[in-house]
Amino acid sequence: MKVRFADRRPKALRMRRIVGEAVEAAEQGSARFVAAILGICLLPLLSGCIVGTEKPDVAVAAPPAYRYAAPAATHAAVPALDWWRGFRSPELTALIEEAQTANLDIAAAIARVEQADAQAKIAGAPLFPTVDLNATATRSRPSQATSSTGSTGGGGPSERTLYNVAFRASYEIDFWGKNRATLLAAEQNAVAFRFAREVVTLSTVATVANAYFLVVSAQDRLRIARENVASAERILKLIRDRVAAGTASALDAAQQETVLATQRASVPVFEQLIRQNKILLGVLLGQPPEYITVRGGDLARLGIPRVTPGLPSELLCQRPDIRQAEAQLASASANVEAARAAFFPSIQLTGDGGWQSAALKMLFTPASAFYNITSSLTQPIFDGFRLEGQLQLQKGRQEELLQLYRRAIVGGFGDVENALIALQQSTIRERLTREAVTSARRAFELSETRLREGTTDLITLLNTQLSLFQAQDAVSQAQLARLQAAVALFQALGGGWAPNILPIACGEEAKEIALPVKG
Image 1 (cartoon, helix red, strand yellow):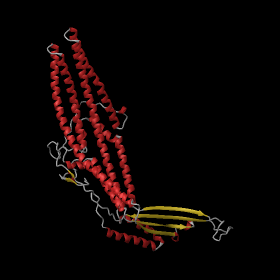
Image 2: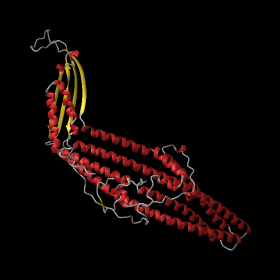
Image 3: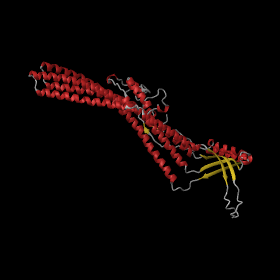
Image 4: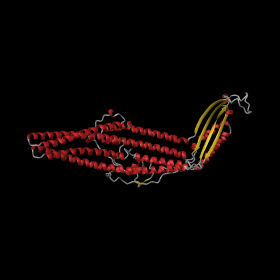
């Protein structure tokens, strides 16, 4: 973004010529006072806009590639706009799409955008002249108890009626660009609120996906816990049969009863997780939880969308929080310009004209017309350093937002790297825990068979039983971690990317990122 200095000399000459012509036209006759007012209304087209470039000097090193990204084509498998469909869950897709339209946080963010647009409209109002119509009818009678001669007797001035219809137009010439800079600041602030809405939307989508995965994961772990309860009950029955036969002790039965009680105690925990996350989904969809039905399913049936992160420089045009920080910084830069322009003179033009008559039937006749044109210049001389303080305040705000913009960029790179690490390691973890389940199940089946045959002791069976229970639960947790890592990666990349419309500036492998970066 670059705002250039205007060539003030030709515009200033044209401005003076137009104002002079408007005044001259008004002086030629009262019938032409409207032309003078219209001349004032044309001044916004001729006023100078001397907005400087208050871009702070910043350079953030952009790595040529992500350290933990898998070798792949640069733009292969970029995030799709509807990236959540890659999990291959119609129910999850329906929940996310409903949340995008019904979530109350998103609705509040949209309302903030509307407020910002209104503020921009208010900020742009001084760039246009104000025109008012004033119509009055006054009937008055001075006191007859007094007169110019001091007489207290009768014969004072009589009653009189005065009718007045007048137009008034005023305009501040934005010669130094103060009003235009204020408008630019408000417009960039509105842009920042639009990106803030995208941040809320992306966060909501990620939260819905994670809550749904927690429901499905808890359902998987609940099924595993119930299967383990059934297995522990089967082993307890076997031990009690051996106790009755005299081949096992009451201690053996008590140990297995402990295992069974432990597995039963885990069931309410998973029931709680399922119900609470269903309630969370209801809140995210902006509906009472009683109206939400979530079936869930099986984590093993869910897919993992394939995605490559692309170039780090592309992240600047995709992450809404980075774009929000960029727009806020641009707004602060414009506010600095407005505060600087406040040191220069303010030029105000005012014109009013209309008709004034003591008789209503004579109101709109040429003889009743009047007009006034006034120009004024106000130069601040001493205000107790108020303007200087305002400029320092805006500069300090600009410096703050500059650092926040840098932090957003660096934090964005870190988020992507962390998500890539989590996705890689959780994939390895899931594979290893599945291998552990296979081995633990085989060991448990062998120990149970040998216990029936009387060729192994109960301690071996208990150990293999607990190992199997723990390994099965670990698989479910690893699956959940992998799904959550995939969601975190999409969130770190800024959600879905529109294909084939990446800005050219964002596709370059630049060593430094200039500020502001515009897509």
